[in-house]
Length: 114
Length: 113
Image (tube, rainbow over all chains, first blue to last red; front, side, top):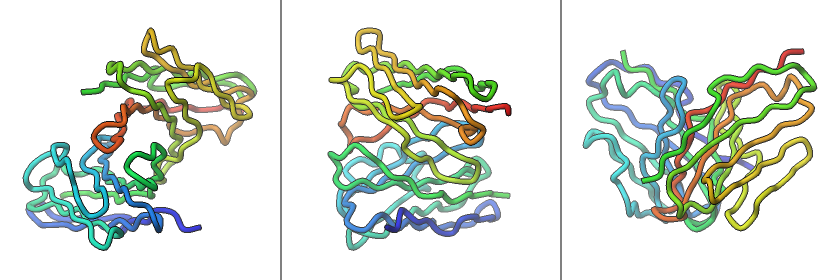
């Protein structure tokens, strides 16, 4: 079946511009997660959704980052006024329930801020 | 919060040899420990996981061991093959905060033919 999909696969933007990253989870998965992976490093948790709600936003690096989820399906991660340090791979994962441990990852969006 | 350390950062082995990657965690409440394999340009793929009520788990050439007392867990790959070359990540979660995973820094494994 279809896995987690993300778009765009690559994004190059200029410093100061806003970007939107999209995640389509596995159909029927109620939990959705966003992680950031800087070059050569491990994954850093950003935010998770239980249904359309985000109970814990403390992982977001700054107030320039926001995320939403609609229809218990697609999620969008928005970065406003991008900075060069935002350059990274942004990975989305989903799981059947929040209490389900196995998370399935998408291919990621590679963001480069010039 | 949880902190996961992973060693080594790079590992080069001859085809057919074994590879071992070790991780330590800090939060004694962590109870689920997955291992992910990430190939170049792709997202992480779950290869094996272990829960805190189990000490060892095997799946063909891959095994994971967990020592709860010492708070460390290890990935063992036997009879390595060139297609095992990738970056491997360990992770841990206590099930709180939506089961968010805390990842180690990754191990780049190179299997030389």
